[in-house]
Length: 421
Image (spheres, rainbow, N blue to C red):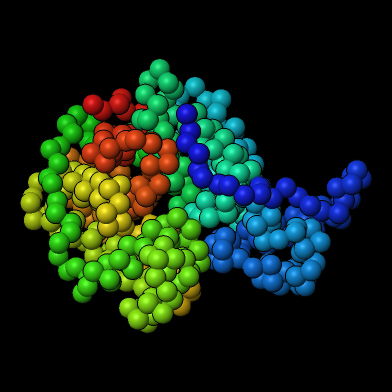
């Protein structure tokens, strides 16, 4: 069973004026598609809540009422954008689904994805939406097709006879999340290298990072909290509330009003403790980055092979994320923060990925990690940590400690590995 994603309001079926029995004209459909394409571009820059009809219209030299002729409101337009994205993903998955093995299916899928991306760059295909804050839309219609898409991703993996349900769901969530995050780092790849990149990401996800013949290591418990705490309980309270809201609804969904309402305090109380929302958001990112560095330094101080260090870091961070006591901010939220803040935050995130790549090199050198493309593997690792914030949607009732068997080991041992126990 796939859990309900909690969306409760109108799904946003199209309300265009052509719906009274007449078939839409080509001109009408062309304009509507152009509006949806513009909405995808705005949502990818600002998130669902940050997109406005005015910005969408401005991209097309229209006035906002020109958009309202096709879509009643922003929510209906966002729903159409997500639905179109799901349709595109279902086509990419279908093109790979007929392959006989998991390795062949993943290879075919990522080759299709990168070829589609190439066509987007050449203006031959429409951009795909980023689904980071899809739940912020609260649309049952989008909820339903998103869950169907999740099932399609899951069908690329080993079947029910090979893996129990929660194991399959956890791996499907990883595969889906890794796919969605490619847009954050693909600018570092030459278009001519897209096929090579597709081969490498498919190989890493299929076979994992552990060297052939190497055993799963004993993980080092890492203490991540208790140091460099905020200056007051109130500061921690605001950091936690803001982090949870950004994880759930994106940067723009975590308004001052919503943060204050979650804590049952006034806006005045918010500004008594925080100068501005952006300052609080930066503090949330800084705390997340600091926790990740703390895990790296603690694991390295404990010593061991590159695999032992890296697996201990990832397991500690993912368990910490799932407990929810002091959650990590989803780094996917970086795609919607104001452009004035984004470069410095992305630089810090990229330094973490660079460090993961360095540990991977250590593991390759000592023989504990397979010879993989460390640049791609470091992005896969960062994404898996980031995506753990939503793992509970697909694995209800799973204890935080079980995340190692269901989620961390498949990351290191491959999505085709048998279920760990």
